[in-house]
Length: 135
View 1 (cartoon, one colour):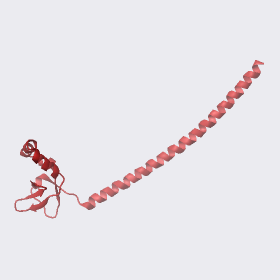
View 2 (view 1 turned 120 degrees about the vertical axis):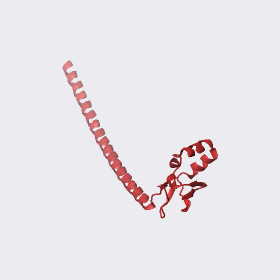
View 3 (view 1 turned 90 degrees about the vertical axis):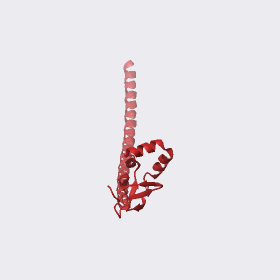
View 4 (view 1 turned 60 degrees about the vertical axis):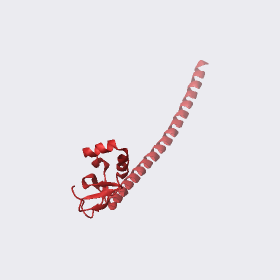
């Protein structure tokens, strides 16, 4: 991307800006410039000048190759809505699975109580049988 295209919105990308070797040296050597670049990362480009092909991200002058084209709000909103619906669906599935596990746990606890009760009865019968045999 060598020129700003009219009608599109651009955002500054620190990573693309650092692809230029000279910018890396400036970034490493100048803490004030580093702070400006870090602050400008992700900001929308303003005051685009077509004649010299540059714009401003905060106090930083940037060129098109250092920018990303901003996604439209509609696309982002639609994507977020789809993600929210998928998340709700997953949450509903998780709640359903939890409810099934809770009911299974209750059923198994009841079954365990019944087995323990039957075991106690059999032990009592065995004790009484042994008592009769000892006589």
